[in-house]
Length: 143
Image (cartoon, rainbow, N blue to C red; front, side, top):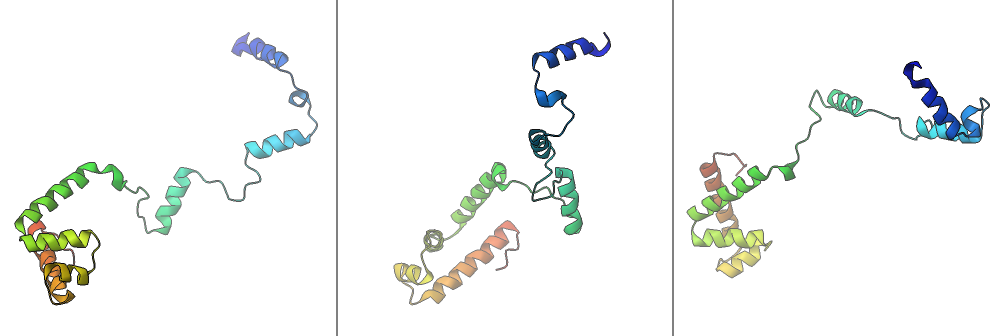
């Protein structure tokens, strides 16, 4: 037959269920349809495209596509190489200040370790290092 109707009927006969052929309502049938069509969800169902359109409308046309920073390995590796090259241009004392600061030492602790009278000398050196990095990299970081 056309469209293989006989095979469909045979499959229906093989896996018969009372609710499949009964046109009356049953609690099982209602529960199935509610789950299948998400009729009792607490939140409205929205497609991914609909979410993207809503996001763009609420954020002045800004695209919803957020880049994954973890996947940008090239940028991360090149950034580390650039920092290492910049560190080679610094004096040994400046390198020590940055290393201690990256280990989360306070400015007072760094001042005591490196022989400064107080933390303001360390802070001034950090600002000078920041300005030097801005000049070296060509980026404005706010120093």
